[in-house]
Length: 209
Length: 209
Image (cartoon, rainbow over all chains, first blue to last red; front, top):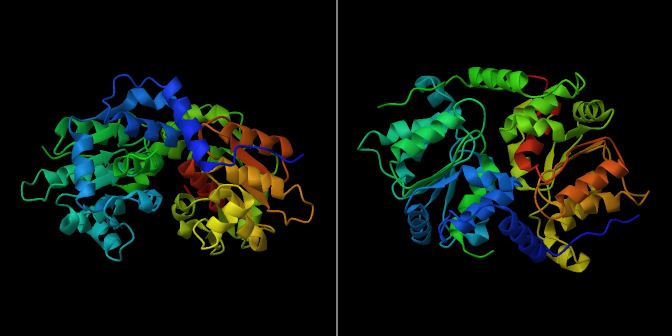
């Protein structure tokens, strides 16, 4: 028997967001952060994500202003950079992922770190005023925090820090939340990942639902 | 203060998988399915994913054999196709995502369906013996099931069916599990997504951890 199902993309979004707003605990979010939280929950398929979301004061304003002004978006993984919906970007912003550039493997060996961390060295020329989206590697987030301890390192406008997993994810996000070198958002704990990170960026890029 | 953290990629994987094997309920999985489950849990950052994973009998054997024989991998989204680790593929397999091809928007309008579903019409020449990886759109999975109700439609070797979300995800995965047109794996319920789907494919592609 042929399966029947909702085939209208706009209706799917509408019903999804209505379900999230009916089921998730969203009261503690500011009106600016709430649509970001909703999209992150949507990407995860988990209303249970809500209590783990943290947005620093001024995060969404800083990130939205940077994107509107044409800031580049710096991503730690291709799954992040490829997930960003180009049509939502307010200024045809550049989306940059340096992970697969030729010299990253050598750089990683030289630094004694992962390729994900080493790739951030290639962000330096783009980092001033950028929006950072880290959705995979805890080592990338830790390396960024260490780079930013040098006052001479250019500052991004905002950091989405949502690496996922069992080694370093909890610790790197706690470190970002403690340091707060610039406005940021995190998912506390092990949860995170490219889809949740992309969702936060897509929410910041446009208010359209 | 500079943050210190585990910077050895191999050690990060080793510690992550050891944590998962210590914490997750994996006893019910066959030896063939267990490493797939571990990688899916790893990608999700959730040992709580384990009870929702379902592998049909013969799924991993069918998918591994297809990949070894050079089968193409058909993905519903760029986040899936970009996440697959090319170095793990046993036969330099083609990774195909048709979502952004020129005629998909017109095809979607003609079919009265989403672009994600319409894009699968372009899979037909590649579908025989392929490994399907659906990690985003419930409408893609539903459309594939309807395509496969036509006995003249070519059969893939195996289906990873892990769309995520609040509208159609539960239902499309339940439909796949009920139909079982070919060997398959699913995440029951709302959970799923591109990272979990990629993890299953990467586990099937190589036994290396």
